Image (cartoon, rainbow, N blue to C red; front, top):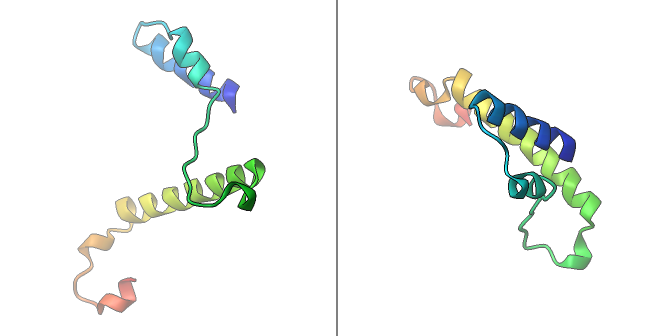
Length: 82
């Protein structure tokens, strides 16, 4: 995962004709998760699994919003859209 992030940073910088700073490369190794779950209620591995699942859900909602045109549906009952 870290290598992927760093590779992407380098590719984006190269496309703009720039260099990636050492700080940005170092920060690419970090993932920060903020939660209300107590420390003994969730392991790091479980947090990573949940983050990946949440990201997939976010992508699904983005797809629905951009291609599903949910905001344009006005002629049906609201509960059907939900």
